[in-house]
Every structure is written in structure tokens, then in C-alpha cells.
Image (cartoon, rainbow, N blue to C red; front, side, top):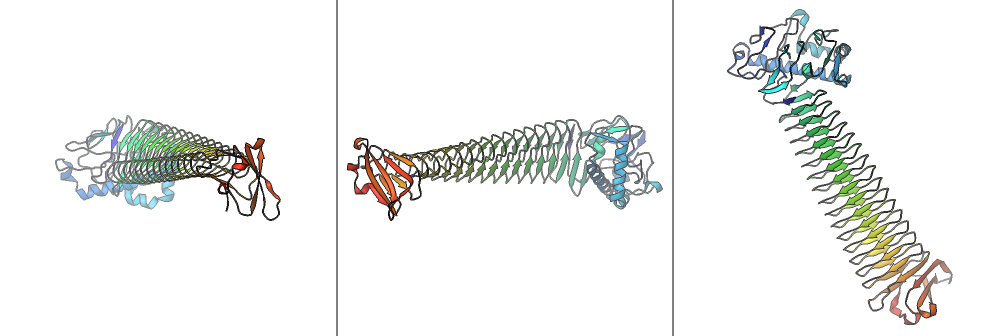
Length: 541
């Protein structure tokens, strides 16, 4: 079933197209009279055109007044239906009718009487929504509602038990059978559509729409305006189009497209695809294995539970993977990526990004730009990429690579492998037995606590030993000619002794004032003979 909502004027679900008349049970409705028959054979006249007979008998003010009254009544009905969750099973029973009556009597009695009038005394304030037996309703030549096989469904009797909706002998009437309860209404230019348990195709208009599509495989398009679209159960496709829209996929495998504007998209349970398109959007995948694409604009993406894929798109975006093994891509812009729990893959791409792996064994690539990266707990693999990056391995046994640029890498707790790559890098091993390699450039290497191995590689490198450090370290690749040196903290003395027949040199660090050894701090100066050491090889800072 396909529905198009049009904004020409407030109008109902039942309308007569130009040049046509409707006949209800043999009654010609072109000239309705004031009052009701008491049997539900009332009508709402809408979209009156100059070439119809109706224009000769009914004033435009009367018609507009009638449609507005009916719209207000429908809005009250929708509130009553929603408050009682009466359409969850797709059926409206006699008990549901009584519940609706009770709700309106308790909350909107005077408003209802003012809008509708009192049928007890044949007083009528406007025309009403009606579907004739075996007929079909149309709206501007678009088929709006399928044939109703039995009964005239009339919204507008006085509020008392059993008179709000004529069931016409049916114990239960499905939402489709009652023309979707005739709940498509327009109030002040805004529209509301309540779908069915079948497969619906609904289009809004340039104003603000609310489309509740219900169960089934539905398609909803808000088009213009600030719209609210809810898919319900089933595999739905929702498009907000223009305006600042809110889209809810609910349960099922849904596709949500925000379109232009600052949109909010909520996938709900199921394997969903969310695309924010243009604007500063908020995307929430909900439970399930979701794909989120922020599009252009400064977006906020949250995968929630499940193995999700999040792509930032253009703009400065914030991405959160949530629980599960997620993939997060920053693209252009200065993005914030948070993998949260799980073994995640994160790419900063272009821009100065902030990347947090969270718990789990993560793979992180900073990409281009000046990035800040924190692997978090777990065994992480981190590549800073191009740019001057700051990288923290966090807890766990991490593999870290600075890439191009003047980087700062800190392994944190755990047995880490740290490579500076190209550039003048600073490498800190932290706690644990670490392996540090400076790579190309003039690098500074500090093993920290633990039994560490320090490789200077190319460039004039500095091997740093702090006063508080503990552990037996090993220095590899020391090169006098390239300007390498050992840098010792002030207040520390260094005692040198030859090992292995003079092939290596052992450095023992002691307190300058007391001569006592500083913890267990020692360093093996590999392949450097004590006799070859010159003053410039050692520096005290």
C-alpha cells in the first residue's frame, strides 16, 4: 500500500479527487446536511476544486472548519491508542474501544465535545472521516487505503461506552480494515500516519510528519520538514530527506538515511545500515551487527552492542564502537575514535585524530595528521602513520610503530615492542621487559623499569637512564661516529667494567653521594670496549 501526504491544506484520509463524487450505500453525498444519521454515514469533504458540484453547496470555510475539527479528533484518538499500546498486535477489539472511550472521557472530554458536537441531540460541528462499504478512498489520484470489506467506520460519536467506533458487527477489526484507523491527520500543517502490520510505502510532505509504519517490510520518506519515522518490526527503509529528522528502525534489519539536515538515527535491534548524509548527525546502531556512515558534517556515531562498522565521513566526528569487535574509520577531519570493549580495528585516516582502543586486542592506524593514540588494555598493534604522533600502549603486550614524523611512544605496562620509524622520536618502555628501536632519525630511548633492549639504529641517538629505573638493560647498535651517547640523570655515578674479554662494557649506576647501587639498575653496552669510550659518549643531565 502506498500513501502520499500532501500539504495543500489540512485534509483527511478520505477525499474526493477533482471531478468525482462518492456514493455511500446509495446516498449521494455531494450535498450533505447538518447533523448525523446516527449510523456512521457522515463524510469529510476535502480538497474542493472549482469544477465539482460540492463547491456550489458547501462554503470553503465550512469545509476547512470540518477538516480541522476532524484532524483534532484524530489527534486525540492517536494519543489514546498510543497511551494504551492498543495497536501492538495489529487488532482493535471491543475491549480496546472501551479503553479508548475511557481514556478520552478522562483526559479530553470537553475538547472532544467541542470538536465533534453532541450526536445525542443531532448537533454537528464538522464533517467526519468515513469509509463506505466495499469502497476505496483516494487522495489526489493516489490510492491511499485498500478496500474495506465490511462496515462503515465512523470517528465521531458522543463519548460513551460502545459509541466511539462502530464495529458494524465485527468482533475484531484489523488496522487495515478500519483504514488504518483513519489516523492519518494534519494539524497545523503537520501530519501523522499510523501504518499497518503489512508492507507500507509512505511519503510525507514539505512540513513536519510523524510516520509510524508498524510491522512489515515498510518504506517511509519524510521528504521536507522535521520528521519522525518509526519502522516497527520488520525490515524497513526510512529516509528523512530534507529537515532535521528522527528515524527509528526498531526491530529488524533496517536501512536509515538521514538526508539533509541535523538528523538522529536509531537502528534498534537487528543488523542495520545507518547513513547520516549531510548535516551534523547522531547515529546509534543499537543491538546487532550494524554499519554506520556519518557522511558530511560533524557527526556522533555509536555502534552499541554487536560487531559494528563505523565510518566518520567528512567533518570532525566522534565514533564509539561499544561492546563487540568493531571497525572504526575516521576519514577526513579531526576525529575521536573509541573502540570500547572488544578486539577492534581503528583507522584515523586524515586529520589530527584522537584514538582510544579500549579493552581488547586492538589494531590501530593513525593515518595522516598529528594523532593521539591510546591502545588501552590488551595486546594492541599501533601504527602512528604520518605526522607527529603521541602513542600510549597502555596495559598489555603491545606492538607500536611511530611511522613518519617526530613521535612520542610510551609502552606503558607490559612487554612491549616499540619502533620509532622515521623522524626524531622519543621512546619510553615503561614497566616490563621491552624492546625499543629508534629507527631513522635522532631518537631518545628510555627503557624504564624491566630488562629492556635498546636499539639506536640510524642517527644520533640518546640512551636515557633515570635515577629511579630498575632492571638490567642492553644497549645495541651504539655508534660513536653517528653521535650516539648515553645520558644519565644527575646525581648518578656510572662505574664501567669490561666483560667477555673486553668485547662489551657493563655500566653500573650508583648514588653520587652515598655510592650505593640504585636498585638493580645496570646496562650492558654491547660491542663497545671500555677502552674505546670517550668523554662525549656519556652525558649527565
